[in-house]
Amino acid sequence: MTAELGRLDAFPRVRLGHGPTPLEQMANLAAQTGGGRLYVKRDDCTGLAFGGNKVRQLEFYLGEAESRNADTVLITGAVQSNFVRTAAAAAAKLGMDCHIQLEERVPDTDAQYRTSGNVLLDKLFGATLHSYPDGEDETGADRRLGEIAANLEAQGRRPYIVPLAPGHKPLGALGYVIAAREIAKQLAADDIVIDEIVVASGSGHTHAGLLFGLRALGHDVPVTGICVRRDTTAQQARIADRCREIADLLDIRSPVADGDIRLIDDFLAPGYGQLNPPTMDAIAAAARAEGLILDPVYTGKVMAGFLQRTRQRGKEGSLLFIHTGGAPALFAYGERVLPA
Image (cartoon, rainbow, N blue to C red; front, top):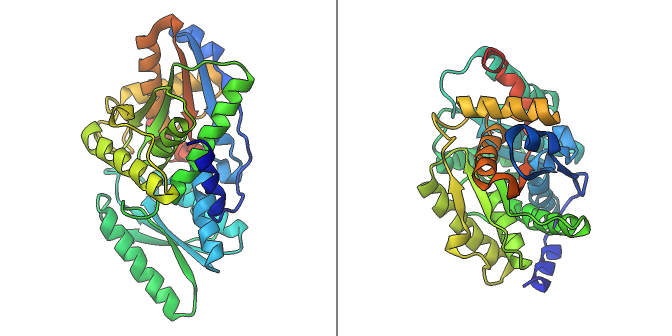
């Protein structure tokens, strides 16, 4: 199976990120929480526009866009989406225009949420912003992007859509198949044995790509996804579908069994992009113990899950936290974060 991952080289790719990203020990956090050996994979350090996991994913989407001679990138996401911010930066770097569609996923937002953080950066990178009223309609959001793309084509532009809904080629997941290989090499070089990896599980590209890559390389370390948008039942089906789609894309048999898909939704409530006490505690703990900046939408909730798994495994456990970035979103939640 390892040799078959060489087929990754057949897909168009543009290099946008800094890598390999560091893999560091979190000794202070371990001491403060009573855990064992704790590590962090610093994919917040991928470089482009505050970094994050989306840089790895966009290398393949925009590689395909360049291969099609596209001059405009279209993408949809939440108002404080890290994906759309990174896409806007990548488009600017590659000399393309960018149209961003912002979906209403988070209720009861304030002016800071709508103007600061990722939204500020979207505008700074010169993106054209659109609005979509339904935050839980992925198919409809993609359809609306198609309408915007059709209008651009009528004006003589060459648009490329980064899709949101399932059913499209999971090009973004390939970035984390590669990341799995990178992590495996780093662990081997430093003679580190990991008992469990904890990662965000949202769109599914990062979680599924990482899990698929590790299993394809022969590594059976458990990978636990922390749900940030859907409950475990819905997310289980999504990750299973993503893994099958990756296998189809690479034209190989999937190395991922149903039992490999592990999920926790204990920190999802009250919903996507909404704070809860364990997430706030996790954000504060990571900042004060390790100087790590986490966000309320993704990495804060994942760290809450990581700390739960740390306590459950005890002093003998060795866990790896995948830091997928998201620092700009923290500023959009300032009025809620600081009082807490």
